[in-house]
Image (cartoon, rainbow over all chains, first blue to last red; front, side, top):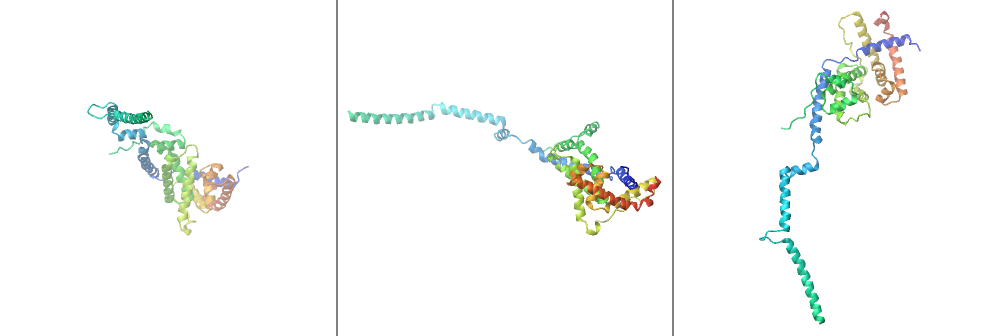
Length: 121
Length: 204
């Protein structure tokens, strides 16, 4: 369909407006970039700790003093277990105490059994 | 003292790298600290935002404020942008129109129909004067349209967007866009016809 004279007129107005649509006032683009820089910096400062947040293991390791602290803790734990199982002579033997209690119980039970046996005899 | 993250500095060759990238890719790059992405988005979208605001509001100072605020919202939204879900330009046009609407709502009723002053009365070549006159006449006529008609006409005939895209921006159907632009064009033609001889359009 052919453009009417009015359409052509109007199109000339639109074309004149389109010729100017890429013009921005002096300084506006610079202000937009200033905003972008500021907000970008804010984003990075806010998101950086989240981005680098340590995992649970790293947090635990840090809490216990790093590898050196962890090594000391492991050594102390191993020493504690060893002392518990095979104590030096001047320390009581917890394992032996436990076994002793069991033996006492068995001894008591065996006495009871012997009593009953003696009574029957 | 905690070190701030370094925003990437960009060499002269990098601008060519970003020009071929989509808007939403650039927005993600911006969120990750790429300054060149911000410069490219400003180049692409800044003029669009300002042009629409100027045509819809008919006021340079207000249009500058709206364009700057729309871009601020774009920068702030960048970390949450979901790639591929929408077009950045569509989002930005919508934000711009909403900001324009906010300004018009805040204005006194008497100011709603205010038209801008001629922008440049300085003497110059005859063709430039004619172009200026057309430019100003179009803006005066645009300001006489209802808001939605003016928005649709600006997006269709000055920004040259498709009807489906305008429908997405204005959140209306394509048929409604066609109706708004058709009625807007008729009203503009009527307003401008009276000034045709005065503007010397026939002398082109």
